[in-house]
Length: 549
Image 1 (cartoon, rainbow, N blue to C red):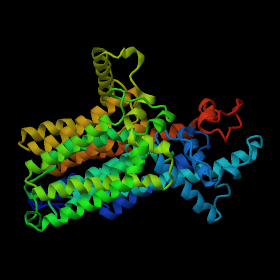
Image 2 (tube, rainbow, N blue to C red; image 1 turned 180 degrees about the horizontal axis):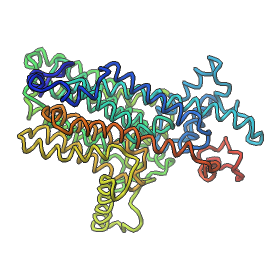
Image 3 (spheres, rainbow, N blue to C red; image 1 turned 90 degrees about the vertical axis):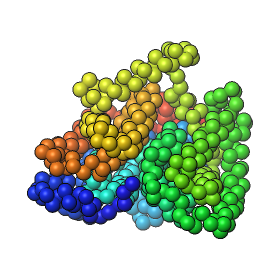
Image 4 (tube, rainbow, N blue to C red; image 1 turned 60 degrees about the horizontal axis):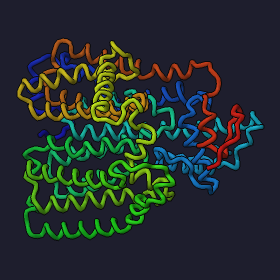
């Protein structure tokens, strides 16, 4: 594979020298340079947040703004967290700490539940909740901005030309998922981006060997578990990683000399000791997550054979098989492979220990049993009947729905990445016919994964907030193709298509936020779940008493 570079790679430079500079579409699309381009992207995100998010009435995006803010207020009051469905663990924890910081600086009066006026005092209640929700929205904006920056830095590491990385960062920043998560307290952004960054780290590690490569795998494993702690749905992305990483190897992926010497087994032994120590530290969490009594309190049903823990073992075996297959395919030594297995184990255990920062057994159960937690809200519909044929028919219906959305013509969608798909799919075919089979396989797997996850998400309506799970895969596929198929940037229509995509991304990504600003309807209809999820914070417009669980 190719070494990342901040300048045009030599073959590309030779091609550019034989053409007029203005014909290079990427040069014309990135006139501000790398730093200037990043500054512009972050500045536009900030402007969008202020104009189309921060000042929106506090109850406009009640789900999940209220749930996250409520639990942050509850935790700051010394009471136990009461929302575990996603479980949004890191999001709630970050808002909790942000409230404490803002209160300490004198910028937020009500940082805890006891400081919120009673709902009967509507004016004071609205003022306090407005301040709290706006403070929470700042967390969402800061989180999205930091993640866009990290995506850009990792993207530059994976591409030969910084211009490709910059345009990919722009496409990510103005994708439908980020547009939604930028201004609302959702759990998907943190979860999806942590797993995405883990994947990008794995790609870099797969392309070129380093003596410390097992450490990179440990970091990736920790990021995956941290992502799972915020949104159990990312288990779908995590399960896809062992297969997705396979085609990203290269001749440079073979183990370094260090891992082919007897001394390498000392490093492997050290990795084993660290892994065992971290697993023992995390063992109480694993035991709690599989405890029948604790699971019963969370109202989960086992997925297979009336037994919990079976598919988790299958996922672990799948990860091991993926690592062994990569080692065999790309000549990774036995010592490094074993060390990497221990490193992944250590990283996953370390990530799991983050649940101790604000311990609650319900969070642990959700993370250890992610599929069961998903099925509480997105199980097979009654019409499926439970038969394999009925499920297959339903799955094909969901798949067709996804393809309709991808067409944009049959079903419109607030998702700019749809238009990237129109270019990525032909690009994969073009790359394959050109003999660029490896990049075609890489991008083909990325697109198949995106289609698969989107198909499963149709059960929950494939809402805008779920785009963050798959949009980055589409953007990454497009960037890999452009980076490899260097002749495309000199084609006649390249610049015009690039400008059109930029306009479409900005326009469509802002359509939904503009709708939210222009809405004139009253408070969100949340009274039913307000009684369950916010029992100590009834809303002024909800008359029924809360249900304390």
